[in-house]
Image (cartoon, rainbow, N blue to C red; front, side, top):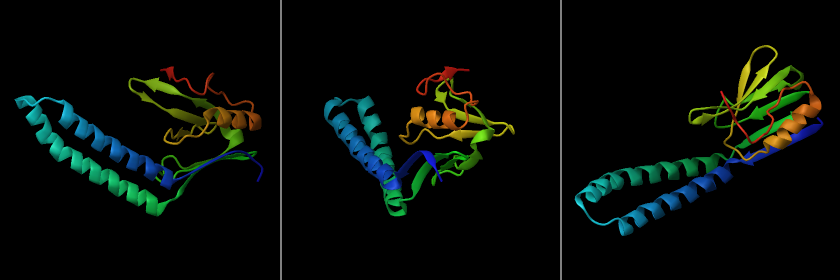
Length: 162
């Protein structure tokens, strides 16, 4: 299989990001405790923060442990025949499509939501996840090399209003 583009990311990397978020959340909580002056409003705020912060910390910790232990691989591969994405966290973002069937890739931005949508000649639509640090520029270049008829965004980093 002659691969033109390949990106892989293990879940342990995501696990480490969650641990970093744990530290940031705890730091923000402690900074708020230190810098916000005592008042009736701040006491009410801290009443809720004392409930929510530990719950979020526990959820982040459990997710980090789960991803560390599971340690599956996100994979995105373009060959001369297929474009394949395997996302262990979401079956919605897992697919395999013949490259010659891809018609267009759009990057629409609506309200506060941006997405990457791939359309095929059969009318199917596939969403490309933005949760990983793959290079859209290199991905689009590999797809264009295999199928020059694909309509691609003018810029891999700009989303158009729709």
